[in-house]
Image (cartoon, rainbow, N blue to C red; front, side):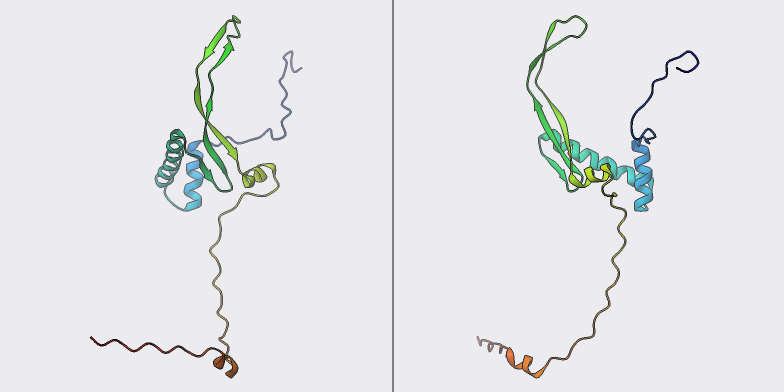
Length: 151
């Protein structure tokens, strides 16, 4: 009790969680990809639109390491109105469904950090070419080209 009022206590593990909305996600994408916010917003909008259209058609959208978006059908059923207790017929419907991938689950569980921006691969230095030994030259004789046809 605090000053005569009841205080609701939160027993969640992570009580300070930042809520990421679309605008913040666009800002982060723009910074990470080094593009304008407009371009990042269009890219995000295109991705969400394509996922939505595909799932609405009934296609399964699988993003490797992240998860699977799919359409789930719910059968018609009988429910109850909680205020009156009367039975109510609930129509069949389709709902979106998401299953998290293994890498996403591990990142959320803290077992593995999410993949950061990958650096460009370092240029490999070419090793000096070795001289062929005389035995290697004799092992595979070169094929002679067939003579050209006359017409």
